[in-house]
Length: 120
Image (cartoon, rainbow, N blue to C red; front, side, top):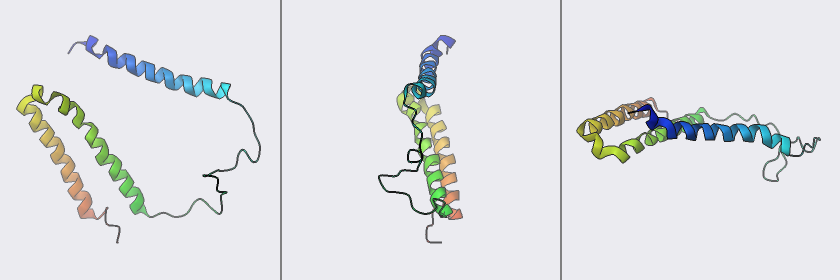
């Protein structure tokens, strides 16, 4: 593949980074600056905060969330294959099978370790 084939991706990345920089730098300058005790309080859906926010949460919740993100991001990598599966042929199909096999091995490992058992 020629380097000029990457030009649209580079341009899109530059535009995205420029937009992020613009939003992070310009927007705070444009907005109002009002400080006060009431303004700095925590606010959650109109309900006043009560007690300590540092309530212990089971590690099972965090493990489930992390594993969801891990196995959900895996799906993103199927998109290039789905777009080009005919052009990739049997070699591409075997590569995707290997990719899926590695994630299935990881999933079986997680199941055997009991990371998704909420009853324990």
